[in-house]
Length: 236
Ligand code: URA
Image 1 (cartoon, rainbow, N blue to C red):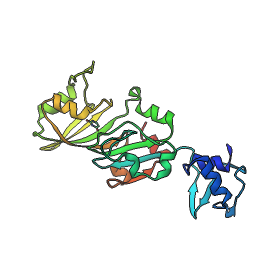
Image 2: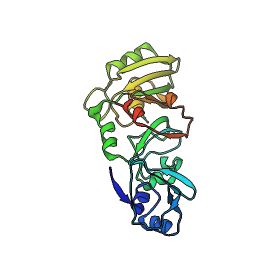
Image 3: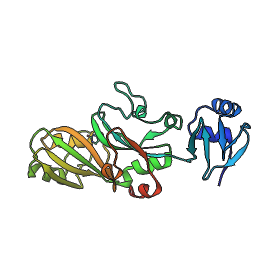
Image 4: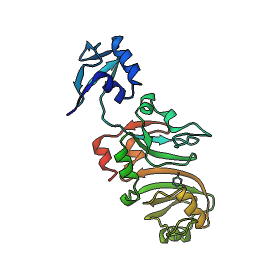
């Protein structure tokens, strides 16, 4: 249970700078339980709190956990240089909350990307020690062969990687598509593994992380949703 002043509450939810939050409160733009609050020092219990700002209801969230179905031509880096960044697909308040991607997808990879402003959670999920399985659907330039599947399962040696990297699952889907599950998160790992095994990745989609899949979330490309406690357990 935590009590916070209203200006801090607004700031923590990504409304904007503390100064701007105070201004909004002073101007009578914020109400709680239909009562306009003009004292920015007034404090409130945050658990279960909701407030209204410009007639929009905001539910207090200590942290946000977000799933996005990333389209192509979007960069995941914090300071995108060549293409729009992933934050352009999300409401502005997430930027103010310092929401960040959990790991990265290449600009031309589509599919499930998780984001959060919970640093400990981000660290825990992206830690290599966690071995969270990630399922990808890869489209290949050359036909998929059983030898390719066998090589990916047995492991391939990548330049600059000390250890041989192997898929924990791999199966052919169509003549030019395969599903592959990786438990590591090395740079361009799927593409480099396919290249090392003598093929070429023409397109890549991340289908699931742990038991959480794009299909179960029902997200079309470019769409996002909040993840609840139950969905977060699917990542473990
Ligand atoms: N492997 C890749 O090669 N690219 C990604 O975006 C993710 C995994």
